[in-house]
Amino acid sequence: MSFFDNARQSRFVKHEEKQENVSRFAGFYLDRLSVVESATVAQRSVTLIARSPASPVVRAMFAAIQDCRALSVRFQIAFCKLEPAELMADWMDLSQTDGAVAPIAELRWARHSGLSDAHEQMVLGQGLSWHGDSMRRDPETRDAFETFECFNTEAARRATLAFNGIWRMCEPIALARSFTRGKTVEIPPQDVLSSLAPGAVAGAPGATASTRH
Image 1 (cartoon, rainbow, N blue to C red):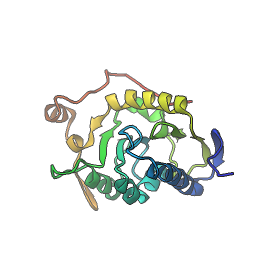
Image 2 (cartoon, rainbow, N blue to C red):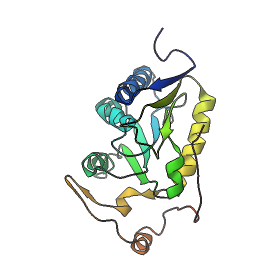
Image 3 (cartoon, rainbow, N blue to C red):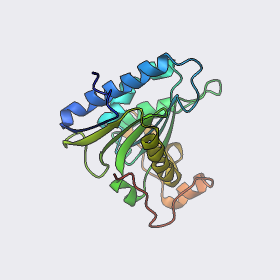
Image 4 (cartoon, helix red, strand yellow):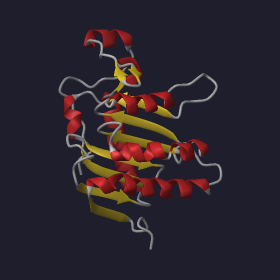
């Protein structure tokens, strides 16, 4: 029996094992997607809430980016923290477009302090989802329970609802910050951000959303 064959796998994972486990989960998703004829947009979509681009779940998905690109997978990622700049720049490259091809990733910043209490989470397609620890805690150094949900469309639906709530509170990263490798440009003041992104959807002061489980 495969590691992911059960409907639900809740596991205590050591921090040094996290990226490998998510890599296996991503491979499981991509293997299944590769045999689907005329996959829908929903089947080719990955949504992700992560503490930072250094989180093991983000590193695992970036390591699989060429396979994702080959299968026309598209990402929506909300980051709580935008460092390290070098890793953020790699994702920013994937969010750019020359007008001919749609970008592989849409990125937002979960800058509201209350969102740090939410859990890292990912939904792959329509039936696979993953939940990690709170974004307040560093997954690179902390062991934690993680949950892998397989063939559970209801769990994926609930996770998607949570993601959509947080996504609406986030700011487009391209409008909030500029990145170069090895250097991070200072964030403009809030009033400048507001003038740069008049259409950005932001939560009301004190608004919170959570992916806690």
